[in-house]
Length: 132
Image (cartoon, rainbow, N blue to C red; front, top):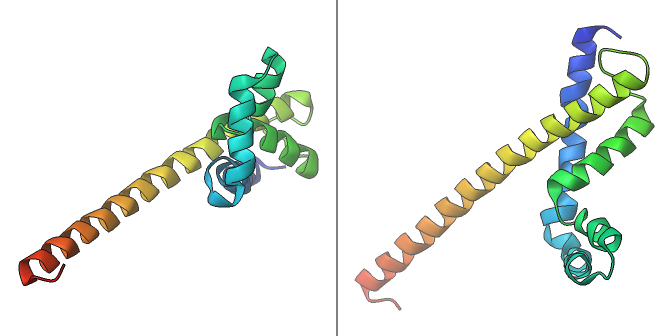
């Protein structure tokens, strides 16, 4: 595969990896399983148990496992066509996916800030007009 095609695959495959890792570790739809994993990661009797359950609570950690799954599904390699290509692809995908997740987190924080500021402005406006 040409290097340009490999780079396109890198930035494209990182999107579903980031999406899956973020959704499992942050979104409401997985809140209950995540809370269970947080509890087990803190109260597990063995270090293996604590670390196993922790991986479902950390987007960076979980992105490694999602990446391995994506490498198995796609057989994507980067720079080399052997095990070295899988290793390089794996770490590159984790890196790009985590850049995507960091950018997404910044956007979400900014949107939340804008909403909070709008709510505060609305309350001030209501107070000035005597509507409580």
